[in-house]
Image (cartoon, rainbow, N blue to C red; front, side, top):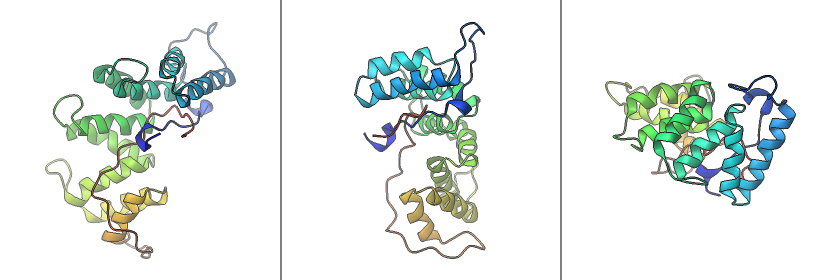
Length: 214
């Protein structure tokens, strides 16, 4: 599966939201995890319609499932491609504090999937995801600070270095390359030189709700 189509393992204890479930209908975290994992199995087997249905039934109980639905609606997996619906679903998970949903929705705004590219709407989402140590959000935000994006983002190479270094510490090769090119943040020793910087900005991590990446 391509990098931006990965799903991650469920973290039920932290991602259970139980938004609109009555006490009588509420499921325990173990049951939610089991149902969620069945969606992961279906997704990994390429049965997108089944995975979509499973996660749709969990959308009020699990933020990760909600985020995966946003990804599938964005890509047209298991349901018709629907950027507006994807935005709606992503936004609910993003507003609830899920970093991957924040990063994905920011990427939609930056790529103009909902109209003209919109850094103003993407920026708060990128900042929130980057603050939660989402490496792709850190890398993308670092790019804006490296070059500057007036009037919203001033050029600030030290902030860019810090963001690249953090993303690189989470294993992001593109960030490591930019970090090697700009040098380490102030007060930190230089790292071993990385390969030449990639010209292509990586896509944000794909669906969350956390199916294991194949």
